Image 1 (cartoon, one colour):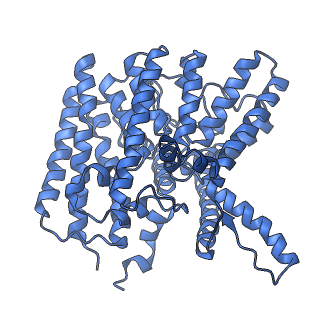
Image 2: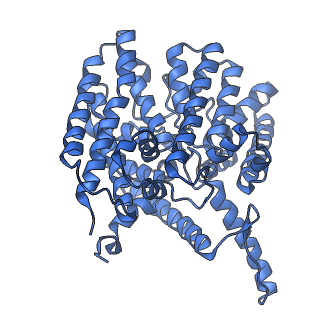
Length: 483
């Protein structure tokens, strides 16, 4: 039996939290006198009122949150947050069409960074900050945030954490999930504050520094400028963005070990080594290819190559150059990066290196098993044996991811879009990256899509952010059976 009243109480608490998180945008709106403070205040009050009604109506309900309730809460929370989070866009008239507002909000909370806005700079300050806040909130997960700073809910945090972070990594900073969440968020908030200061000192306005810090650490990619990061021509700003995108794509457990001075734990991670080495090889190779195709300033070519590689692999989605303009071969390589992702336990999306690494290692060992059929050849990650259950889960995930990509591309093609655009739109939405290829490339946006296509891609964003199984399990008969 599913405890629906307990779920509704948690949903009420989340809506109240969302209302509270709108207040920084209200403060910026008043400071910059952008004229959108009334709509933001109204949106916050609606969240507080509706959330408070649910929360206090079921305040005395049993809070026995099991795994089944955990999956429902995680899936429903992202949907409800997206529905209520779009109110500032609708009420202010910044995005008056509901399907457009849903797309932009889901893209924000899932840190995808795809946008339907054709003139971002015309938006008022409060709305721009709220747009960036949606990515920052979604960066490390709404549920982890709630477990960390909203303990009055009294829920079983481990079930929610597992449901929101179903990846294969098992590293934990602390055995108590609430303490783990707090420490991860201290790192997240601390790095965001440091980045605000760096961006500001390097030449950004405080408002731009605030917004870009929120969307860099969340690997979200929303910008206050139509030209994205290419607007800021300062090399030091772009190198700073590269560094913090790289950090945000690193497992936050490893960042915690780094802050504790345990640097040996970082390089001991097989996934981190694969992440670092892959980035290095791609940057050098692509920079060399670009210099061969379009000779020019070596430093600028190297910086553009590094920026785009790090941005795509960490699924941030910032752009400083049109990576589809060099050659078809490089476009294919950049397209493949949409399926990579950074490290598990980071704010990045897509498949992630731990799954690629497990697949490659297991496939390599299969040749050894063929030659020596009686030998016991275990798969090890970080020196520890990976169980058959985890290997099966990863293989199922990879196959399911590929199937959804193919089916999604077919759906987009049947909706009237060319195959390249369909591939690009589905890959970037499912991977929570932002820019794709075709008509949704780095210098384009998603405004031309039909309402159906926007809603379909929004669904894919949610699927990708929650790593497929969390939402798809709700569509299975096994989930709803009593036993």
